[in-house]
Amino acid sequence: MIVDSKEASSNPEIVKNLQNIGVDFKVESLPAGDYYIPSVSSKDLVLERKSNTDLVRSIRDRSIWEQLILLSSWKEIRPCILFEGSPTVITKWTDWSEGSIMGVFLSILFDWNFQILYTPSERWTVITLKRLYDRLGSSKKKELFPVGKPMPRGLTLEEQARRVIEAFPNISAARADLIQKHFRSVNNFIRNWATVDEISGIGPKIKDGIGKVIMYEHG
Image 1 (tube, one colour):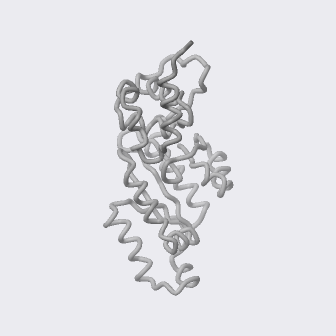
Image 2 (cartoon, helix red, strand yellow):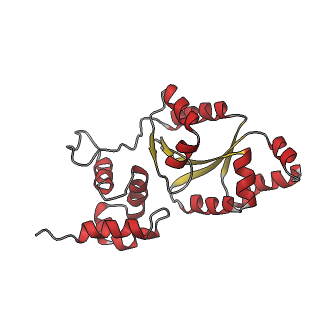
Image 3 (cartoon, rainbow, N blue to C red):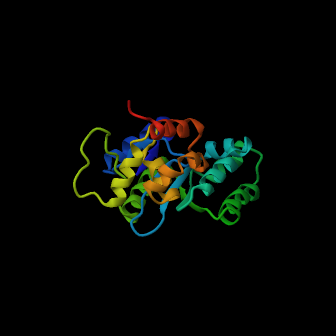
């Protein structure tokens, strides 16, 4: 599992409890979402966690729709909104009706075609993440291998290729996975690196860093 660095910083108790119950995870910057869970037999799952306050804030500043756009542009994953808390609390804090709140959920479900999970508390969120991690297949881990160390034996060709991509500056395991799925091969990535910023979450600065490495001439 990969936990987004901002999510880990703002919710350290979730990270601590995931560690306590034996979930193997990395903390990295994700291009979208809060939790990336690899799957053995189907598309990987990416969850955007929304507490009561998060949901109200993101609806008011309309950032929720930007987040949904980012998630929907991430190919080859299953996007999911994990709502934590009680909708009843939202009606007490705001003048929103039950119908308007349910309208947001129905839009996410039917207009955006996202899955929705519900948990009543942070504790239940941790339990849900653990069960998802176990159910989808914890054996498919996207490992990070530090640059400069020998490549471990027994890696699949896919894992070896991902490690090559991870060697580029500012390329995390999650970004390497996106690049690998977009270009299909390291060869295609090297030949077409100038278009890498078309991938959600990879901007001009990262592209320039990749280009400097590829175009570097020794001596």
